[in-house]
Image (cartoon, rainbow, N blue to C red):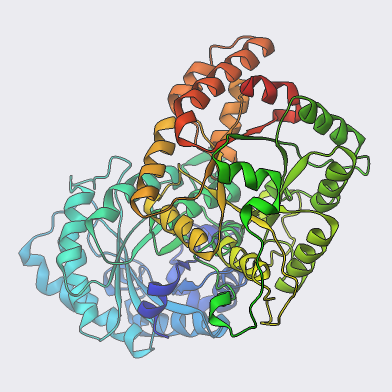
Length: 608
């Protein structure tokens, strides 16, 4: 499959900085880094290999400044051909069968120079000379990067396109979205989008992850071409005479995920990024639903089987019956312990049962943490307390065989209500080197459960009697890319979802907009709203910055900042949660309230 065809199916991960890695290995800044392809080829090869092993799908040749103009400044213009050819060979030596090699070409003009027509013939000759060599070595595309003059970028693109290669153009702007010469990102994107020689557009260098995300939000609506972002690892700080990029791989990767959700098709790193940044980003991005290649689950109606009597929703469990009857349901989320002692959890569940709560929500390894088996915990709660459970079940840790075994075993043990979720990537938790399975995502697993309810297992074999599992799914009304989240939600419903539970809602209007949009698309399943009583300003900051899928508006942060004591923080958090509850009460089927830090009293006060 060609590079452009691949981009239509899956976002791709780029490599990180070359100069940063070489500088870290003791190469002085005044060295011609491109010449190292000849003088220290093993060093360049090692950097490429580190990025490929980190998970990069795209690696750029070490040829950014390998043009006659730049090489003349080092007195080595006669090595132009040898450098460009060697650079491609070194990248190809470490490339895997599915690794794409981009021929890197930098600008000829400085950012403070003027582009004028009198430059055209000279620039054309210089671009032709380098691009012809890269094309002759059969790179997969020409990457024109760090351009600050859109006319120069377009000129180089037309030359590159004459060699029948895909042409990617990436420009550099400041955090205000302008080049040093005052060209705005909107103007640049429109001009490149209109240029038939340009196959993909992007931004690189000059911006940290947060600023790059902001610019991408402005740029993406202006083009239908694949968009790339190669941000710096934040802004550099001087430490002992060296410029050090302080952004952590986790921080960088969180923004990479958001960029993919926004619609960016290629994400990589520029100055300050390392193989560790790319490895962390690759793990997180490639486990996102819609990115990873999941096993396709056949719908039960596509298979010929004898008639099987299915169990209606009202007969599955009390929780399902109340949803069908239109009665408001209530549940409280209680996380299984990290020890083998279940009694403290059971005591909290008893408190909920005595307060008339309908069900206990039991997460499955939240934040990729290892706790006592949520299924064992759910069985104990139902057996010893008598309150129903909503067992979260994620796709991260088990393959399809193991998941089906759990679902059948749980049903045989009396568990009837599941919330199907994809699950957090391991890198988010305490075991970052653990392997994530993700045979399917939440849509695929929903179809698996729906099939079991119709007497069909994952291998197409008949199961009679069938299961009667109530199928719940997650919904995120505050997703970065609302249309993508809505389509994902609709796919879950089409796969068999019977109700949904949202991420914690801190913006009532965002939920109402999501419900309106879903109803316009014909989505009619009951929605249980997630509610989280904040306990402090610090707690609000953590949820906003560290918990995927949770958005805390700045207005709420500012409001929580006025709480001076622990008691004030909890009281204000409950007040806010009740306000949100009341604002959405007539649009939802009930409430799922989290018990922060396991404090059940706080959750019960929200529902009081």
